[in-house]
Image (tube, rainbow, N blue to C red; front, side, top):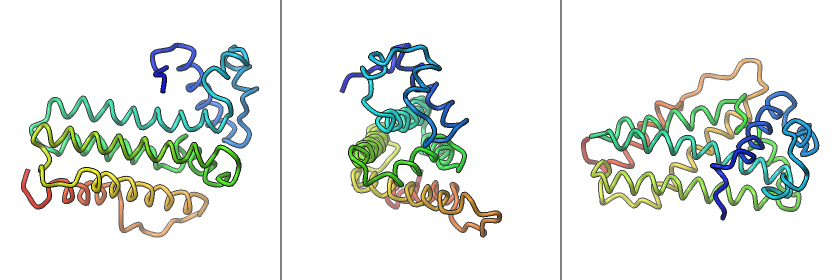
Length: 203
């Protein structure tokens, strides 16, 4: 996969799409509108994506990369697992908020899963999320912050599944006037992951 992250047109494409999603929602955001708002030609946009759903998948991936950047900054300066895991927890919590672009995109893509190409976008996002969390765990093990006895791949899959569960819960409760008290929040996610990653050891 080509890395376009340093490309100005690519950044403009993602930023504009995010803004339009915030204003209009996913269903009413089109590549034509993005083209008009960015000034990019159809050919320029299709150089990066072939559909708006594919573009939405890239936005989800970029949100994961933001959390990754925060994690990498903290792990370099940390002598315990606390700060890096907090960076992950805070980042995931932001993605799961009902008004976040990432949550809106995930809601939209799940509702359109039966359409051609969308299942592939979701699969790529899942794979990227799992690989990223796996890389975080392996980095923590390399730095001596996470026990070597931890099964990194299994822990990564557990973390991703738990974050999905919290995200889907927020989607389901997004339109309710008064949500019931939630027994599991980001602090609990942090504690749960800490127990998994410490594997019974102390910081």
